[in-house]
Amino acid sequence: MVKKVYYQQNNGHLPPKPPHYLGTLASSCWRKIVPFLESTERVQRIDVGLVEQYCANYEIYRNAYQDINENGIQVKIFHSLQDSTGAIVGKDFVGFRKNPAVATMKDAINQLNSIGIQLGLSPKSRQELMQIASHKEKKSTIEQLKETGFI
Image (cartoon, rainbow, N blue to C red; front, side):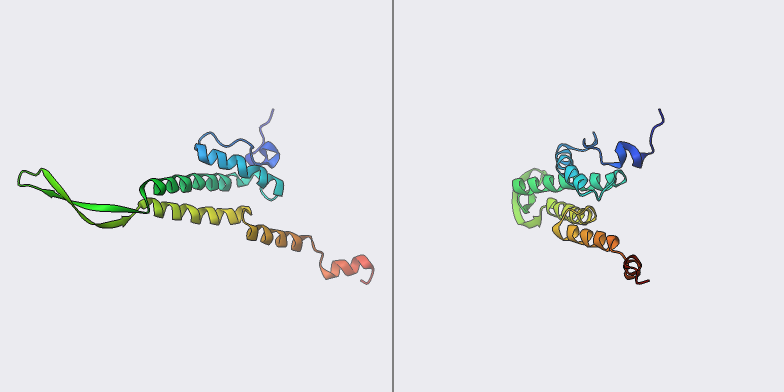
């Protein structure tokens, strides 16, 4: 039996099961969005990389969000006080710094939004995809006139 080229495998559809290398949250995301994406008939097997990126960024977002919930948006900064032997004898509070997970979460959200638009995962992007599809389906004025017999 001849193996089909990659984009034709699974009849050109996304695989229903997530790739084994995705994490737990990314795999869960895959199982939620792939049926929807397949129902729109706007994605194909070749788009699997975008779906993987979306799901991986979803997991990054969720992990960063969990870290923020556990450690807060800001982290306290202390300066250690040492005696003449080098032993720490106290700590002075010197302020706060942003939890690095905040930036990680922001980056993941930006990626989710960017990739989600490409996949049609927002109301606005779905509407735009529908408009593009309707423009492709519309016949030109000349074609319409030819069909009616005017030309």
